[in-house]
Image 1 (cartoon, one colour):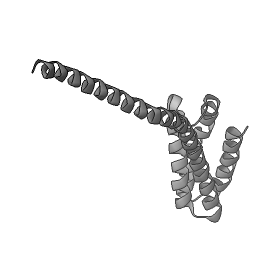
Image 2: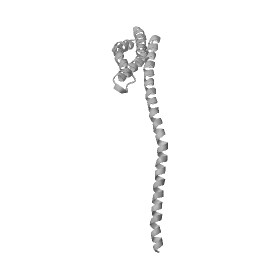
Image 3: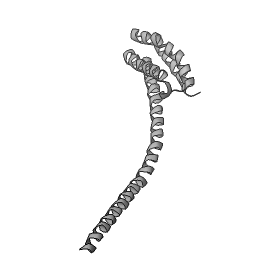
Length: 148
């Protein structure tokens, strides 16, 4: 009886040690799978941010080009809506700070473009033919600003 009594703690100690080794191996296996995925996630997050920046710039350009084309065709209401969207997004981007899709130089260069907003929107609302020329000039200025 004395012999069995001393062997019970040894079995329990062995089981606890085996359990701890098993848990440590599981944690190591988890980390071996997690760390590479975490590194890949960080790299992809940067790519996603760059793609979103480019998408924002492309949408602004698309709105402005659409407004210029619609104004040339005489569809002034559609042109007004597209121009309004362009100016709204441009103003938002210039005031976003570090999260903006625009560089500081582009933000500074956008101020003269934003100054034309009221004039262009008013001309489009009136259905004035001169709005098409102003939108075309604005589009060229925007192109020079974004692609120096």
